[in-house]
Image (cartoon, rainbow, N blue to C red; front, side):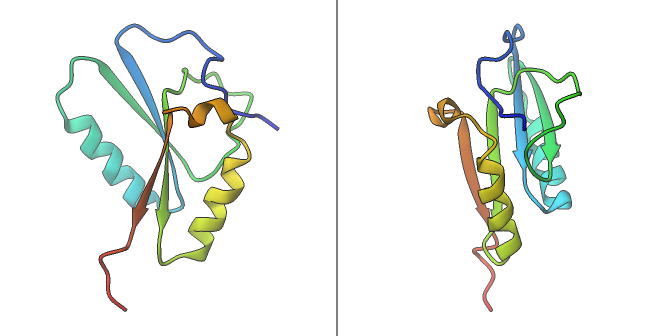
Length: 108
């Protein structure tokens, strides 16, 4: 089982890597595209994952921020985030993890 730790790798110069974790692929892709369109002084890399843990045999960059996307109308979405949190080191929660709730504006 691979646990994500914030200081496992050296940071890239002027580079930030964000990992978006959620069950809705289209929403994650739309969010990633919106983030990449913004003009910023540093290079931004966005990676998408349906759940954690990530494959351990893949060479990936250091992850600077993990954003968990939860659909408020889906129990599976919440369960997926709960299961994924087990694969994140506790030190990530010191300013390197965020939660984004979606679906709150829809009325039944």
